Image (cartoon, rainbow, N blue to C red; front, side, top):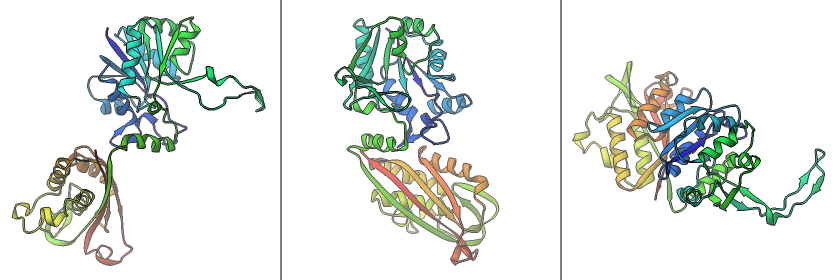
Length: 372
């Protein structure tokens, strides 16, 4: 049987308050959407993502070739219907990007039930809290027996033709199994998993992080660098050439931002520091670019078994003005570090010290890395 998978990622994420779609929120080294895709990719022949209107290209750039991106609708059901139009599989999994940590094993169990003859299959967990039904005034009307209550999760699995029939009614529901139920179909439940919870609020990210970092060694490091301006030297900063700007003295190209990041990475991984790895006693690094040093530092920490979660660098100086090229700087540094998450900021020192008196530039960086 051919398996298709639809990942619903068209939600605005208003409850999360990030200011952009929740599926694009970063969790460690990947977005929630990428985590969801990685769990379904081993079992799905076709993956379709519903993107918020206006974010189609952003989502396409993230997921890359091989994943179909369609524009989501105004509701979850409308989004799924848009995706169903391009489904080619005999079975289809419907998954929420917000349940980013649901495992491949869970998806496999859903598929197995479909192969054994079920029309619709949903993972479910027993409800452990007492549930009350209330009226509009907040008064309790009744207390259902929780022994018969379950909380359902995704991915949910369906015979594609049955789900299309259920969606033909154009009814709205918070999950697709409800449409099968309303159409008179039978929905089979299987045991769900705790990690398939829905990430809805910022505090949920901490819970998700605890799952991802279990068994991982997390480390942080700080690095600094400073160079005085040097007559006749070109200025290289944050991996970029700055024309019409005076450069700085140094054994290499004097890129203080790149050097500070290297130092932070070495500090976090206990691999020495900038001087011990690229110092003046290493003639092969005379005039080396900051990009080269970032690439070599990245190679060294990778070989040591570390992965970068994110790096942040703050450039300290009166000039050049970083804001106009911030995006370029982030891209250049991230590329040198294998696509790592990067933040670049800038400040001055109100006329104090080397940088405040206009005699040079400095930078301070932090790095968060982890080791399996």
